[in-house]
Image 1 (cartoon, rainbow, N blue to C red):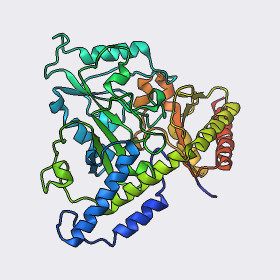
Image 2: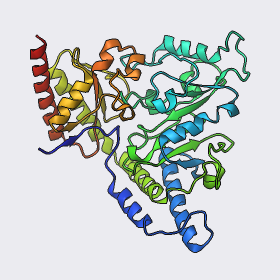
Image 3: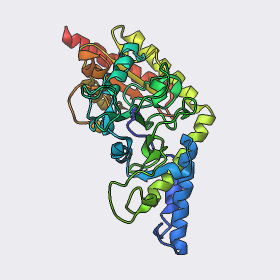
Image 4: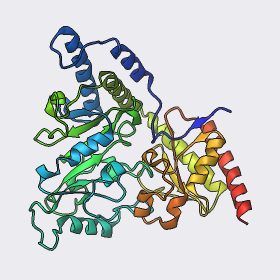
Length: 392
């Protein structure tokens, strides 16, 4: 049985470009902080990768801070909240790397259809401006740093027009800007769709991860758009221009840069358009097999490769195990939450209620074929019939 991998939002296969760059970097023996020729050679690999990542996300190379993961990048961003004058808050649909830091409960701004909820946005603005009954002040007690992802890892739902988040993006109908800065997780978006900004606005920080776009695991980056360098969380040798101490992972960073460059070329070549069509074929076939299955955010702007769907009475964890035994890798939520038998916090925040426990995610890659998709649908439909027969 040939297995079919349909969990690319959890991690992607290593690109050949990244593998080649990493193999070459293994022969570089210098420490990038050393001033001799060997050290300068290692430093050159890091700076090349920094430029490649910067080109993918549309920033200056000096604004790229390499980290050990997007999770570390998130922690580094949240640690800067004091510089912005207040507390940190995350939407309930954010990844745990940001959501677990939240100090204020915010409403979800997307409903179960993936539509930007106008009333929720108004409530969101009220939450941000409110300062424990002290009025609309801007003192240190106010929320000053907010996490708003460009694309959700579980549903694939993107902010309108595929833009990254900024304070003007959510509140574009109001004059001026709100008194808060934005941390935008672009981990799932980067490498699949162009990273763009709304007008001249940018978030304060962006997060991304190498292994989500065909690079190696264990490497991420914080993109810093503020005027000041982020204060390092760890003291040490002052690497990354004093922003993240610890000898850089030269091999991993080289792979990250090569993957970022290849991902940019794939976007320019329109390769994800084929994947978007495959995703639609998948959902149409699943719908034909089950008229009770719902597709979360189907009518909204989504990542081209992501489908999240739920079938009444059929637990997502059960579906994942049954499909795994049949040779298909899918997921029931974020991979970072694996092993946790509980409903998706993201889907509950969108108002899915009990159906949140029945959801699974299928995420396609550039290598996914229509034949693999239809094999998946056939097996899934067979499993559904057996489940329904047992339920009678």
